[in-house]
Length: 71
Image (cartoon, rainbow, N blue to C red; front, side, top):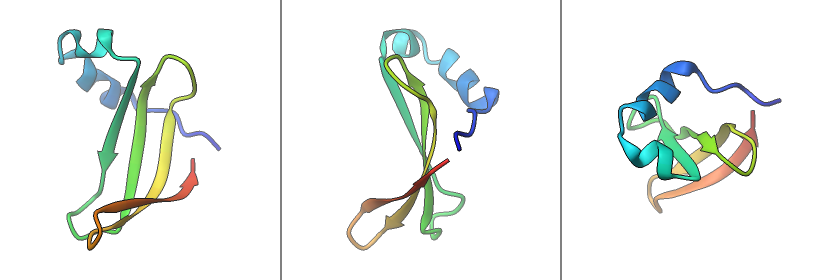
């Protein structure tokens, strides 16, 4: 299931000048807290494909994100 990107996230890109216009893809990383192992990769913009939120697991010891599913 694909979760739509909230408009508030897209609005942050509008204030970034030409960054939003010039980019083909924009990815945003989100964790609720610094100690939280659950993370989200938000595909806020993708000119050649889908946008949505990918659920990931963060391994802080190795600074790795591992796929956990796609919403």
